[in-house]
Length: 232
Image (tube, helix red, strand yellow):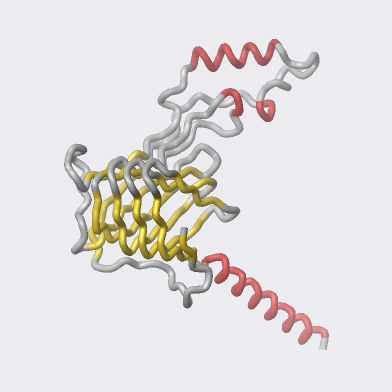
């Protein structure tokens, strides 16, 4: 009898885990997102990985779509109108650029920057080292505008920025800051003025990789019905 109870409880826990996993993997579906000129829109939350399906995305000139505290983003845009000097990018909250898979049907594409560069560690709040650049995969739908990476003055230009953090740090300035904080430390606790009591490495992070691929269809995780859909 006891074995049967334990078995049933195990089955129920397993089923609950699978159900929760499916809910967690459920993509966020957005019907229409319009960003006005110079407007910035951010998407953030507790989950470090997210799939987002946008039916229509209109980005006017110099607008930006950013992801905060996201390690991996799968972004699917079924109808994309991109103006001049627009930006899509993000980081994982630990100085690393977001790994992003961007699959889009570009109806209009003037100039887009995909910015998932690693961030520089700052001595004022250095909780993490210089970050790594994110990995980028750009899937563009055949039949739409074809992105080009060579001529920034022509339409259809996409710039992928995923270099490592740390290139712009100044070692001499960092050392001066470290010495100053050591001198101002509490007696007996010389590292008390340093974040987490650490002196962080000035080493440069890793550059990210990128790939641009033509696809015949935009793929994403299945979305059931329209539950959770929203306009912005």
